[in-house]
View 1 (cartoon, rainbow, N blue to C red):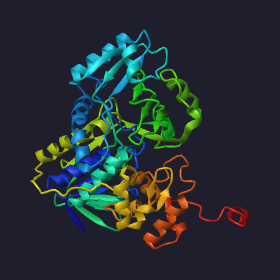
View 2: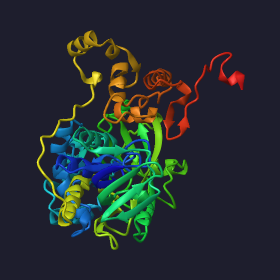
View 3: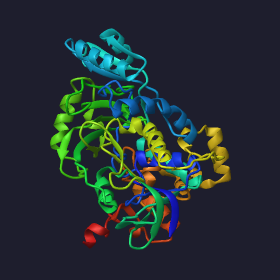
View 4: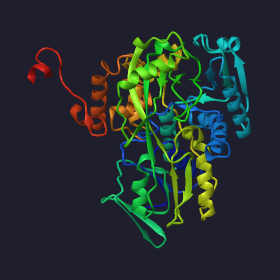
Length: 480
């Protein structure tokens, strides 16, 4: 049995922030997720925007934590060695939009947002030359930022692990019982004993609530679909461009990623379950709406269509003690601006634990070392590295310039990814223009050699396998 102080369910950005903060506070804790890697729920397909906080309704948890969290991200990014682009953002509109933008400005000032300003068209074009000719005004939020949500999540978990935290993946809890003021968690094979439980499971929050004996809560699922453009289009916009928000959310946007691709979306489609399939009916909607704000979009440069899920509960975040278990904390409905709010939510939840008797202490934290990025290295530095280890001179993914050495580095990391999808999220291998058409065979071979198994046993994601074989004459097509 694993004995710990805090058990956190849900390895998304919220659970990962709490896990890392607790370990850095000298608290024994374990992060539990039923999937094979971290960040595989709502976090994986998040837009990656750290919002300034002007659009959150006044006097809500969303408004409070968004503004606080936004200020915390730069220091976190520096500490864990992940990219953060302080690019700002724009909400744009036509000649009739000034009053609506001014309402957002006033709301932002009430929420404590700094560096907000309404710009006229001439000023906007200096920032974004590809704005549609109908755009007359824009609210500029200088403090908005962009990150990679899944890379941040992975980095936070890795920092937590190297500082003593435990991570349990592929752990589907089947029972949680109380014994001597502790929770005994079991998946039928392994037990975990914890004094406190934090339920940050997003779409699965009711599964854990039911096991603990807490009442279920009403959840709403909203699918957001995206179009991803090739990085040849990286000069289209320099920051997220939003339309005026509606009751459905922030609207369909055009925004860059930290990896220099452009994405368009998300849609807002109510669904009954955690369904991340892409509905092609949404293509025309996304194209039509984003073209109202941005000109010169080359939709022929689309390299991927994907979707994510927002899990909502009423109109605000829900963070509360259990009604039947005083050492249980429920975190639910963390939709946008959940990513922006994550560090502040973590601090708030840890303070809640302290109120229930949790003790923290200062530790000498070990620093997480970011993975090697040969693509960003100087020629001199790369040659020096290759002389030490020739694997860094063998390119596996030509689109993203990822080497065998980098892949092996990730496989030997604190969270060794079990799927090709897991390697992709860490290094962007298979994420480029060809979407893995040429590099998958090389990646499979490297992973199979590392895990000492057959290539056909390496999974794409979850339990899904890739087809392995020769597709040329006499290959798999003719054999079948």
